[in-house]
Length: 308
Image (cartoon, one colour):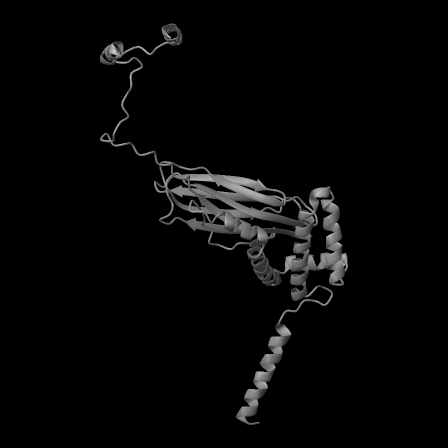
């Protein structure tokens, strides 16, 4: 056997070994690519169910839309549940599905009407969106996918007295178990003092956190996180938390209107006219002949008649 044949032989053996050792998903479970599509459709359907909750049938709508997603992908509920249990136990597969699904949701969030409306809202001079991180992300109650950390650093536009508002839309997709996430925000000022804010997020909808203005110190940076707690439920049923349309608005109080300019003292002033005429005018009026009255005119006419 030649040297070339030996190299080809060992190369073939190595390739076969690599393929044989590569982990694959058992056929009884949903493949990773299809699982990504199923979860994305599931997310979109549940978002629609939340929007159609005005009639008080939100839970019914969620169940109906979920069954419609399964029918679209020709799956049974048992296949879906068993596949979710499998992927929760395989962090390598879950990480890839998580990353691709997050990218798709992030792209969808950028193009929503709500996002464009908020852009119009922050187009004013005194309001700006200072959020520079991802506009959407997904959490599952499993380490390390149960926490999202973020940081916002100040720039030259930050001033004393500014108000800040962190907001996002939340959508929980849970088959069972309690929903409980924590939003935490620490604000550090230019004198190294720190103010902290926290609140629980336990339902789908709009969430906001307001940072009260500080008139003595400017903000140096913000640091915070969103943490999804799994609670006491140890089951491996579907539990996803989606956040999108994330914004952090810096709002500045509009400047006071400038006071009206004072008139120059050299301007001509309107003369004050007294209510009573001066004595000189009164004396002058006394020397003028009186206007004949109606009786005087009558006497004058009689005299003229008698003279004739």
